[in-house]
Image 1: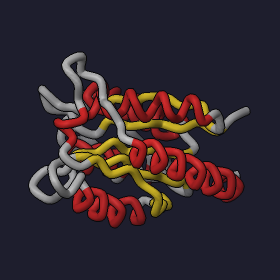
Image 2: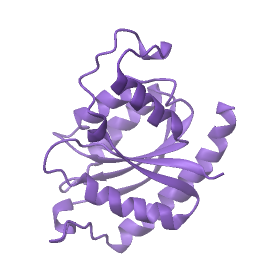
Image 3: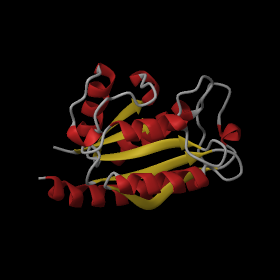
Image 4: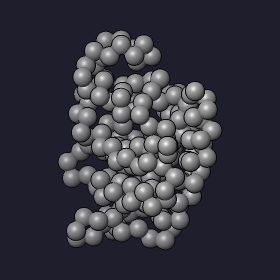
Length: 188
């Protein structure tokens, strides 16, 4: 049974380009063949600002949106966060979603496909890596960075990668698979 990779679209705002980038990366992950790749859209979970009465470590969730999110997070063996950069930092929707659950994230690897202007979302990804470590997620070094993302979106709303995006995506998936195999042992 292949390891399950959740490719998470982190932006939830109207007009976002994350779904275009995520669709491309999902196609690369399917072609890669080492994971069962699943596209996850944070917007579909409609998570309000954290509203659970108990600490997530107890896993006594009261709200249906939390139970649904916890089940999704728990189902994956690895994650790739498709993340923009907002004001030199992560989108609030991602930080909120990360904080909703705890044990469901533990001992799993994660990579980043970041996008934005000239920095390509690098500053957001660096901050997100700090948060991931407190959830016992292993952030890997390999990543895809998309600078000036709007120049890579065509008139049909497709992301048009360059060779560097493709080779970086394959490197990310290769390394993520190694970590996912190793960390699965820790969860058993």
